Length: 246
Image 1 (tube, rainbow, N blue to C red):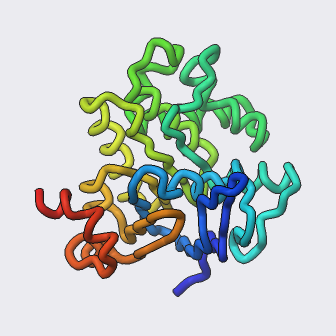
Image 2: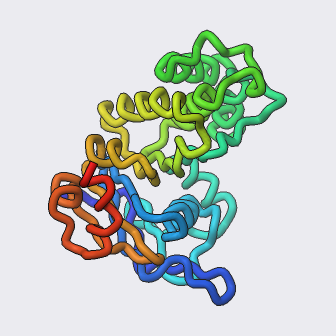
């Protein structure tokens, strides 16, 4: 197999005496769609935040193309330009328009010209169906629209990997489908994605690998055809029992 884009080795994270992540080993290869599932509190979002360097791990290392991701802010900024993140709470700038939100990072971090940043923003806003709203402020948008703008903003950076932290959890049920639809479309383009989600049907139908976490451990890591039909761990079977019975 080709060299991993991301290689997480023996990763642990504690908050005081509370151990949230324990000995996590995970590789992410080009073109993979990895869905991370598990009960609330199992460490899924903390793992993503450690991968993106929003949290610093207590133990272990994160490698990007074989090089350990350093602690210097400059290194972290360069790394995040390649490993983007979409948050459950959108994290848009409320005082900026949709277009300005999408142009800001490419101008400040990638130092694109105004014309290049504009062109890239329009391209990706069209991709997620939000081009008609370029002059709107976030307060004028629905939750689903905000999340689609957040996805477009991340795509503007041309990331090698895009991390999604429960991107539909803050949405009303009727808006979940529109965001999952955009993510399915992105998956079909070959974009490498790591998705923390409670949407079991999405994980089953879209992921190339599904990772089940419990109490800070990776309990099972398998293709969805295996994990959803023949989970090896009793804990995985227990977690999936309601879904598998549906």
